Image 1 (tube, rainbow, N blue to C red):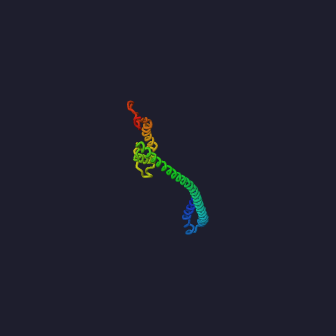
Image 2: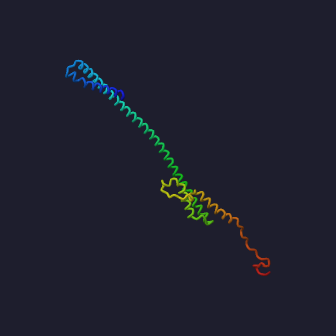
Image 3: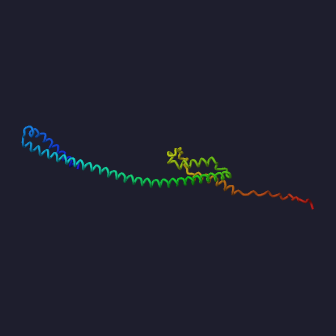
Length: 206
């Protein structure tokens, strides 16, 4: 439609230019041929003006319909995004509950690790409470290394990044040998009296 309107507008400009050329001859000189042509130009210009107005109305309606279509499409996109957000909310809640459950399980586990380590230390004198607490802290920092900026945590040196199980394995390896040695030690036998010693009678000589 825009191209058609442009063509009609170009025709209007041509007729307006021609009108300017013959207007004096028609009105000033009274030239009948010029008058006839001028009258035809006026009719054509009037028709063209109406045609341009109709094109403008059609283009305006097209713009309105396009805007309405864009608005419907945008609403459709927003509805789909809202549905997607609702799905993510469900996942968020599920993961949040899962994270809380995992934290409770983690806390239960590290308390048990600490208590068992204290009981072992009470018998084998190691691992000490300080070493166990340091291992608990470092294993947690190691697990969160990829997220340390989120939690504003320090960065451990690579040689200190170990899971808690690796710490526990090192303690178990060191302590197990000591405990097995204690278990394997022979029991001490009570001392026997020498052969030349005579037993003493409680009741004296008979």
